[in-house]
Length: 296
Image (tube, rainbow, N blue to C red; front, side):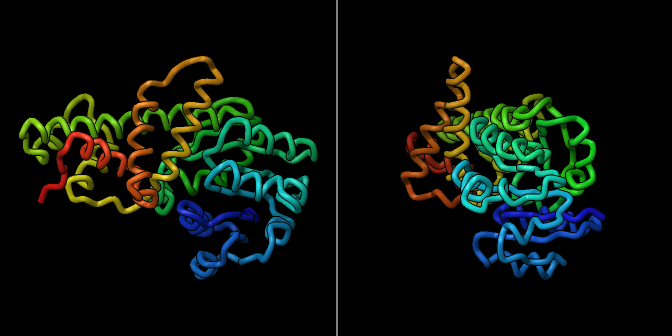
């Protein structure tokens, strides 16, 4: 049994905590707001009033926070994690953030001799609840192997991508694919609607072709049902799109598919759909063409 401190119980955190407890680990939780703590405690976690109290004596500290600002506040702020965590702990950041923010927290931990893994996850609420996330990790191989026992209960697969920073970079590469596929699905459904095709039949073809995609399979029927229930919020897609563009710019290359997708993400945000699923960007694609994709 590993003693784990888990910080942040947002879209992903509560599901991960439940799976860690289900695997036999002892979990103490902390969250900036009290709302989700009750569900975690009902699942067997212990609630702590402060970050310092949560991480005291922890073998592993894990967190999945929304953006750079949240990570900076929790990790690098006054009395933040980097200043209070035991130097015997392994710290694992599961957040999708910029390489620069990840490097800053790594530097703060390593200055105190704390082992650190950047380990962002692919997947959303459903995968977090089901222990089916895909984790990409940057860090020391020995530390990675020691942390496997807490990564595997929350994931379908775990991948060591290389030294520190490799995980966050791989996450942005993968999110480029996600943004591009959502844009492709939105454009293809919109084009098919304009052409008078049966959209249910269109999805039937997309499901079996050599260019099929689990994203198409999941998002397509939801779009036709006008279902944008959030598993990964549009506002987070906007954040990720900007991270990808900045990352690519730093490497002196363009990412035209993400740049195009970002325009529709921004339009969907302007329409007031920030809290809807990221696939709400598809509504902006259809609206521009003057069609509805809703089908009975």
